[in-house]
Image 1 (spheres, rainbow over the protein chains, first blue to last red):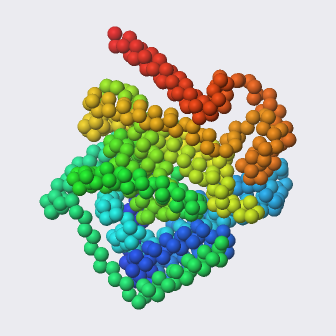
Image 2 (tube, rainbow over the protein chains, first blue to last red):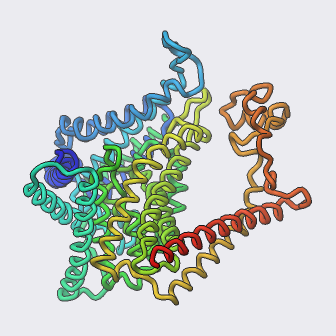
Image 3 (cartoon, rainbow over the protein chains, first blue to last red):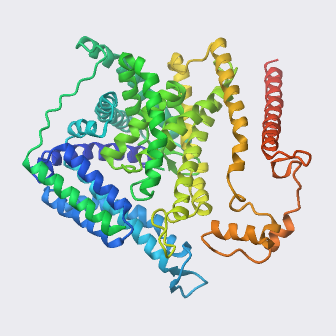
Length: 271
Length: 349
């Protein structure tokens, strides 16, 4: 079998599981953002993401990106892994999408290419830069939230955005089973891979993938019944309760003021 | 297809959240009664399953690979309301935890893939499999079409959201502030990949999983009882009638649709102004392009401008045209159905 499809899928699963571990580890480090109340962090970073989306000035968006980098350093996150996992990926994807805009956006000619009648326009260049900067700033700020907040705290903090308690329970369960099913699927593919000699053609590969998906679905549904019975045996009677023991401290009020000041400045200067 | 942060303006994101919110609310209300039974773990697990299948690299004819969203099979197994919740949950986890798709654009992503996708998949599956026997191959085709149609509708919606950005959000110099491509670029660019690669991946996954479930878990792909099938058919006819009644809404939009100009529009001052305004202030040519002028009269439609000559009311004309068009499609579908049924009967003999 070609190394392609199965190995790529297994690699994808391994990366996802590794990312989960990295997030859990970094969320428990002793950095600036990790010590803040999750509700303050959620609202503050989301407001900064919206401020970057609202801004029409490149300098303001770059400043918000810079603020994200400073917060990452203060939160003891590795800039190298940030660059590898977040900035380069976002840059590669967005630059590929933005590149044709250099030529396709109507406007004043900035640089005429020596061949044909193709020219980079000023509006095209500015538009591409704005898009790349905005995506980098937004992705940095939203990744900071995930890397510095344990998942369960993040979910509980969503209550401040009036997300219904049932949805939070569903998200918590979904996240738990995403990890479990990723591990199950990974084990299924690895065990299949270890029993294969030779190559499968495209049709057989498709059948393999779809059948694995089918078996995974059967396991999922079986697990659904087991989980329900387990929930009932532990006294689940249809009510979801969240234990929220968050308490605002002086540093949270200070952080709240800092986030508010940065958002107001970005919105006023970026308009 | 997972739109990241930064590609859509905050107002577009707000509109998409506002459009998704009532659907989430209605879906929660509909499933709440059942939510604290087996549905709670089932929904979570199905969302987790969709998430994991999105990571499957599916080999496609031609040597490339694609990923499926899983909306086709989710809508068939769970129904549209629970499916929209399950896919929304999977998209939320992807956005919040894995950074796949933005947080500000989560409303748009959920609307495109979870909401529109679920209803499209469910509607297509119900329509194509209507009256089909449990073991009929038509059901597998219906599942494939459900996945294919759903993913392409989602892609079209995303392309429209991208394409309206430069029209609505640009600065004084004409620089687009968000996604930079107009509809004329965004739609073909987006659809090229989805009509082929992503559409094929979704169709194969939907049909394959449907076949697997029909063989191993037949109750899950609930082959409807005759009474349920009749009820479903009634709902679909009702929805079709509603859409027909809404067709005169097209009159509300002023001017001609972009790119649907007639040769005479190029010599009409008012039409020229409309063309320029809708084309980023690029002036239209003084005369109709020669190719357009040559080919414009190649075919004269029997109902030009959605109204026969003898009808004076534009709204009534729209309604009449819609009824005629739908009738024509139903006749063609009926003939095709009769043809395939008689061919099947012949082969069984």
